[in-house]
Image 1: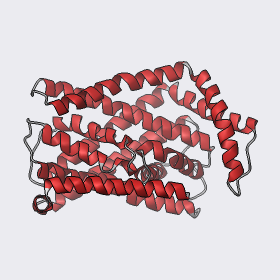
Image 2: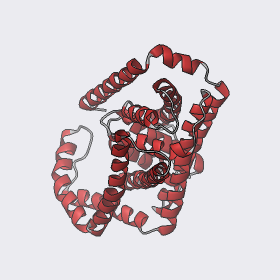
Image 3: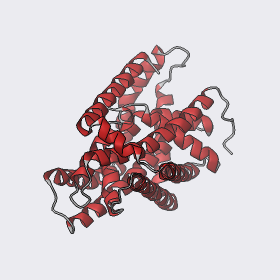
Image 4: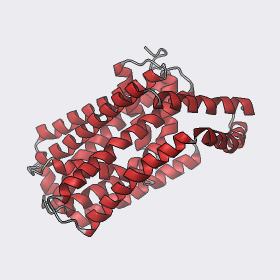
Amino acid sequence: MTTNQRRVTAVGFLGTLVILSGILYLVGIEDLLRVLSRADAGLVVLVGAVTVGWLAAWALGLRTVLAVLGVRLSVVRSFLVLNGAMFSNNVTPFGQAGGEPVAALLISKVAETEYERGLAAIASVDTINFLPSVTLALIGAAYFATEITFSQRLRVAIGLVVGLAAVVPALIYLGWRNRDAVEQRLESVLTPLVQRLTEALPGISPLDDSGIKSRIEGFFGAIERIATNRRGIVLTLTASTLGWVFQMIALWAAFWAIGTSIPFSVMLFVVPMGTLASITPLPGGTGGIETVLVAILASLPSIAVGLETSFAAVVIFRGSVYWIPILIGGFVVSWVGVDAFGTTAG
C-alpha cells in the first residue's frame, strides 16, 4: 500500500469514526448499552453462524464463476479467497470498487491464473451479487406499499432503488452491446497510464503496447465467457440470492437477540438498502451503511422501534458481517503474502 493509499484509507476510517460518533450521540451511549446488555448471547452467536452461511454462499458463487473461466478451486479455498476479497473491500474506500484490484491479485496468486482473469471473476461476482439486492428491495417496497403510508424519507429510498433497478441493468446491457468500442476506448486510455506506472515503480518490468492490449483483451474475453455461460449465471445468481437471505436472517436474529420481534419482510427492503451505502468513500461503507440502516428502520411505522433499539440490532449485525470477513480475510491475505497459502489451485 502506497503512502497516498494509506492516507486515503486513514481519512476514510476517520470519517467512519465521525459518523458513528454522531449516531451514538443522537442515540445516547447509555441507552445503547442498556439495550445491548439484555442481548441473548446464544442468539448473538447465531448471528455469527448465519454470517458464515452468507460468506459460504457467495464463495460458491465465486467458485462457479472461476470454474467457467477454467480455474478450479476447492470449496475451502473458495471460501478463504472470498473472505480475502471481502477483507480488501472492507478496508479500502468505496467498498467493492476500491477492493477489487486487491481481490483480483489475491485470486490470481492463489489460483495461479492471470491477473486479468481474476479481475474479471471478482468484477462479475460483484455485479451478479448486486442484482438480487435490487430485486429483493423492490419486492420489499411493493409489499410495504400495501401495508403503510410512506414517509418522505422512505419515498426517497424507494425512488433510489427504482432508479438503480432501471439504470444499472441498462448500463450493463449497453456496455455488453458496445463491448468492442469499450475495449478499444480502455486500451487508448489505459495504455499510457499503465506504461507510466510500470516505469515509475521499482522491480516491475515496463509493458509495451502489445502486452497491455493482450491483457485488456484477456479481461474482456473472460467477461464474455462468463456472460455467455447461462448455467454459470443461474448458479451464481442462486448462490448470491441465498447469501442475501442469510444476511437478512442475520439482522432479523440481531433484533431477536435484544428481545425485539419484527416482521422478516422488513429485511427484504432494509438490508439491500443499507448495502447500497457501501458506495460511499468510507472503508467498506462503514458508517454510511449503519446510518442508512438505522434511519430506515426508525422510519418504518409498521415496526415502531426506537433509535436505540435499531442501532443496537445494527451494531450486532454489522459487528458480525463486517468483522468476521475482516478476521478471516486478514489471516488469508497475510498468509498469501508470505506464500504460505499453497501453490496449486486444487
